[in-house]
Length: 257
Image (cartoon, rainbow, N blue to C red; front, side, top):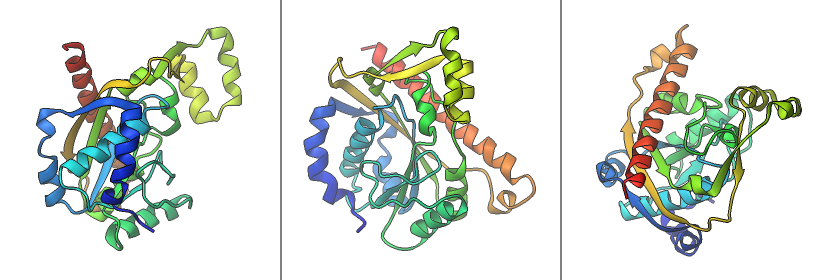
């Protein structure tokens, strides 16, 4: 059964103190309540952070949505191009290919669900330093928003990178990457960085959130035209760039305190 955020509030209250001491919403994001009331359906796009980043990020986001009047929101997840059982995700499905997109579209158009939550970096978040937004595994979330006629709510978070350590992979060990899936081995050979889970630093001292409402410029007719795939990719790149700018700003704010 689909669960709204109010039913998840007790879980959030118990788990949050285990993950971070406090969280804050960046001042320009204080319109969150207005955005929620204005848009009953949204696709929420978050940066992943390190491997352990999603749990504190999603918990803090759930708290922020509750405080902004979103108790009745009913989310489901679409992670890295496929549905998965993320915390706060509500119900999820494990179908493949176009059927996943059609199922997500059906959920946004009908039934109790209001929001689709996605972290489009997927497994590529295991590479890098936990701050840089990795290339997206897919741009299906943009297609979902365009076809459903709903905007994207971009949610950047910072602080969870403390839960990971960036490890440089020696060139002599890069050959081991051949055992990895192609979408991981190729980026690893270029970046030579792995994000390793790290719990010794304890809870995140402060988790910062920054939100931005973004309406894709891609129309439905353009999406369905011959240039649709390229235009879809460009929109996804725009989302990635916007997320990265917000993460960078949060890093600067953290360094100033």
